[in-house]
Length: 190
Length: 190
Image (cartoon, chains in turn cyan, red):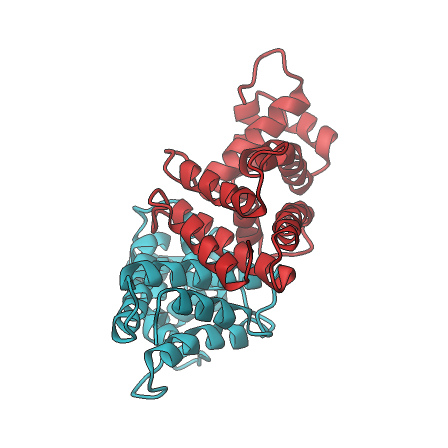
């Protein structure tokens, strides 16, 4: 998502925030963010009120893009099992790209250590929506306990993205999809 | 691990660092750390050279204690499957304590985003040792592919501790141990 000189100060700040928070962590300073966006600190505070609110807004803005990256749109793949596998195949692909640092929403939760932070609330929504997707597929695929299977798949998803993001695991041999398959089998899913 | 006035400046700094980095994250300032330890900044730099080295030293110092918390010592429980379950039962217990923020070593890797950092090296050792423990048990229990099973169990371990630490999952219903069991079954382990 390239920024151009024609983008508004608000858009430039949101883009810079999404990129720098992901690359360097939530402790990055307001000064560096504003410099990167080419926007004054005064304008930043006028637009967002605080760094915390800017972080939350940048995560919320990336949400549709992020979700489109990892969950299937439309009717393909067709079976619930394949639709779940799709998610794990996408993170395997992403995990070998140079700038990969894992799921940005989990990272923000780990870094902030504060469930009350406005950005934590955005991150929780993203996590809940993915769990909801898994649960829906698990139900359609006839899993014995769709809610438990969805929670198990979230453990694998967040563990895989955190470990690959930290460069202590590689997912390109299909480890995460294979793990998801074993759990779908155990739950009696088609 | 309480600190006393009789502890050396070095020990006081390492204890304060371990506690504050875990509670507030690696971006906490040197000033706050030194204040909490009751040690001058000058002494801190004389003892450790840099904040990065102090962080690494504090993680290294906690390592034996941390490993004793989550892995079985001695010969009980007796079976490989029970020894693996033991690890997941310990994080389920820890996850419902008030100050729980997940695995401190994974958190440091997620926060630092830098595999070259001296603290990342310590964290990798801890993660490798746990994977080694899982692998050893998987071999003894007759798993079809002990290395793959060990890596799968690490996904579950890190996903479970990150999610529980971020307060987006509860492990006290046995979710993580149940997930580990399903994967051990799938690997044909006794």
